[in-house]
Amino acid sequence: MTSTTEQLSATTLLRFATAGSVDDGKSTLVGRLLHDSKSVLEDQLEAVERVSADRGQDAPDLALLTDGLRAEREQGITIDVAYRYFATARRRFILADTPGHVQYTRNMVTGASTAELAVVLVDARNGVVEQTRRHAAVAALLRVPHVVLAVNKMDLVGYEEAVFAKIAEEFTTYASDLGVPEITAIPISALAGDNVVEPSSNMDWYGGPTVLEHLETVPVSHDLTACPARFPVQYVIRPQSAEHPDYRGYAGQIASGVLRVGEPVTVLPSGRTSVIEGIDALGESVDIAWAPQSVTLRLADDIDISRGDLIAPTATAPATTQDVEATVCHVADQPLTVGARVLLKHTTRTVKAIVKEIPSRLTLDDLSQHPDPGQLVANDIGRVVVRTAEPLALDAYADSRRTGSFLLIDPADGTTLAAGMAGASFASEAKTAPVQDDEGWDF
Image 1 (spheres, rainbow, N blue to C red):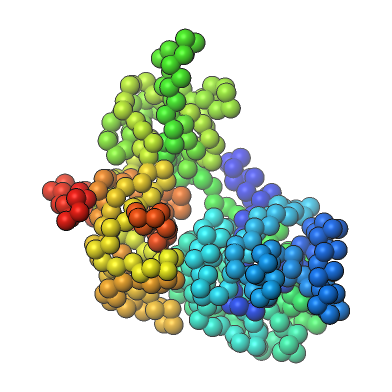
Image 2: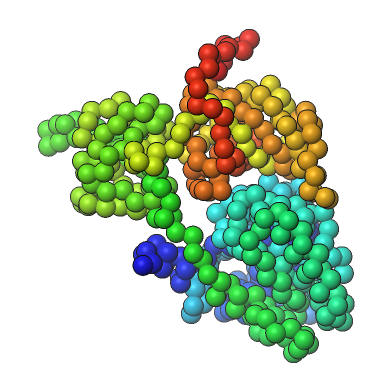
């Protein structure tokens, strides 16, 4: 039986991101999607037409519909992640148009982290380049279940089938080796509109869907309610009023799974157990709640619980660990080095940590691992081992994108250093004696 959450995500909403190298035509593709699907307001189109005319262009530059920053318009490139919302008769969409330059790979991580599909553009004249491989690797690491290869600017290679077939084969082989589960290749011309919304008469050798048709029909089957329940506590509610003198509730958003009144639960990292006595949602008491609802839980026992604790059904509670092995994408300008003191933010919990090892860095050309690089610099993807000051209840990222991900943060200024995806296995849960570094951080 299909759950309500799965039905909604499968039939009405798709989150997707676009990525590709500079000048591959991402913004033009997005603008074409918005324009041809009648999702552009009249005043927006008039503004684009006016700016295009001032530049001496004969036709509206549809890329201007998404390049919102002045620097983007002046340089003709995408810098920031541009979120767009549009809808057709078949589905609603949340689109993240991410930058193509290697300098902004960090922005692609942001845009694709919640995406269920990624559209990777390739210039038909250039084929698969390093940044194409980088975007495929990020999509694979972030467990994006569907990837579309949009081979753009087919009009500039005479709409040749052989050019498309060669690029599609190379990309499919590479992405499959990365573990991308589903790859769909579509030949397009975003500028001319070929195979974006309407089928192209210039490529009658292609019998597949247009980009929009694929977006409207791709199955989105990830069901958060099918995963074990996880409830990160955001806030403790204790009104201490005459009306509710003994009320104690734990507010937050259910990250995954289903919670029920009467269910035995464990509070992590303390390991204390209790039973769900009540669930309050939108001011009313309910017997059941599921992801991604925001609710307040009431437990039968008076337990010391604070922001950052995780409540989970006792039968499926995750193990806790202080030794985190993970793959990270480094997003800061300053390098991440062995011995670096950082903050690790996981769901609503932030703890002190030290980078103990950087075992390898991914070489994108051949997917080989460069051992012991010593540090990761901006846009590097590598393996790290982090020791935390307090135990964390991490899931494997392959099992849960919500509770298997984390951020590494610079404690000095709050800068995000890296986005991490926890590995499928963790170090032993055996207790180890805490150590203290020379500045007093306990581990």
